[in-house]
Amino acid sequence: MGSPSSFSPLSGSSLLLQIKDFRIAKREEDISFYAGYVGSAFMLGRALTSLLWGKVADKYGRRPIIMIGTFTVVIFNTLFGLSVNFWMAISTRFLLGSLCGILGPMRAYASEICREEHQALGMSVVGTSWGIGLVIGPAVGGFLAQPAEKYPHIFSADSLFGRFPYFLPCLVISLFALVAFIISYWLPETLHIHTEENIARDSTEASLEDNSYESTRTHEMEVSELKLSTPQRSLLRNWPLMSAIMVYCIFQLHDMAYSEIFSLWAVSPRKLGGLSFTTADVGEVLSITGFGMLFFQLFLYTWVERILGSVTVSRIGAVISIPLLTSYPFIAKLSGSILFLVLNCASMVKNILSIAITTGLLVIQNRAVPQEQRGAANGISMSAMSLFKAIGPAAGGSLLSWAQSRQENDFLPGVHLVFFTLNIVELVGLVMTFRPFLALP
Image 1 (cartoon, rainbow, N blue to C red):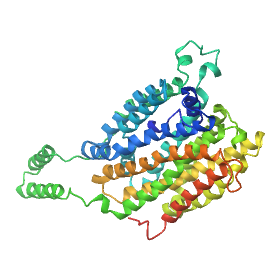
Image 2: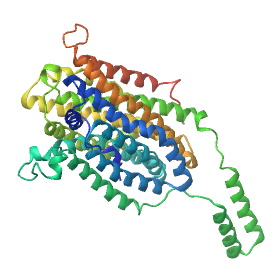
Image 3: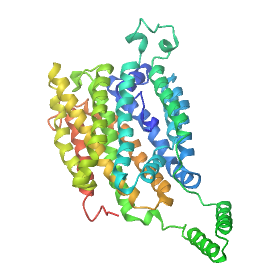
Image 4: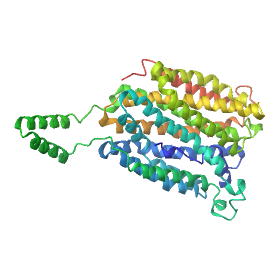
């Protein structure tokens, strides 16, 4: 089961139209600026509560948090589609991020339900689900936003979807989250909670079955040792964990900024260095990218990771990403079917590399801690990552807005500056994957 919270249908190109309809931006170049803050609100909310949700998952189990998170998506994603102004949109996204603590427990769940030799596949499925959500969500928005304009023979301007032109894609994602909520009820719990009642019951059962004082005494000593061993060393002093989290955050900052910039850049007019795509065009590109990512993670990633290792895969992915991003401003000079073909290939390769980079770091994080601390460890990871991701959309939108206002500059004109900045962040992440910074567990 993927993370429904990542399937945000109103981001990128669709969010750009929604912000435009709010009439809060005074200039066309300012729309990206406001869109970035709506994207950041979700991540800021998640950054503030992920550690709390992780600790709750360690105490009460993974499944309850997963169920709460999916139901939260049903409520607040629907309300987001009914937003009538900029501040309502920001508030609903912030509350969704705060109350949906699903991703950290899902990562812990994936590492616990899989044997060690299959953990890379388990983490890749979680990473792929999140990555595909970031791609398919905007694609759904591109196809279904403003349905009264795109499909007037089905939706009238006086209908609910005509009065709320961005409600339909949010409703579709909310229905998907409702299905996930129902399915999650039957998920087996992977956290074994040892309470006083369980300990007493286990001791009594052992006594009745064995009818032996010695065996009962041995069982009680084992249980006592288990209780005494519960306190673990501080996660903040676990350098393999903390170093992997820091490297992971840098790459996530890059990926979130790229995701925000890509859709905004694609729908920007040619005179501003964009592609003049429609939301449907962007949705088609992102849909193709999503299928490519799914195929790679399910059928190729584990094979590549087994041969090269998690860290090497991350390094190779970062190295290839830099020249690929450098080519984006030149892709904008193409047109017609050649543009569509080249852009699809570039988008697919870039997102596949991003997922490959982060999946290896997730595997390292979960192997660096015992099961009793995985919820809290993933909570720390999610809080730190969400803080960086909160910076990503706001910084990406503001950077694109500023870059589009300097088309005539001699040094890095227009969108050249945007993709150069993304490459700097990617390079910093690449350097941090080497010793002495990154320590393997």
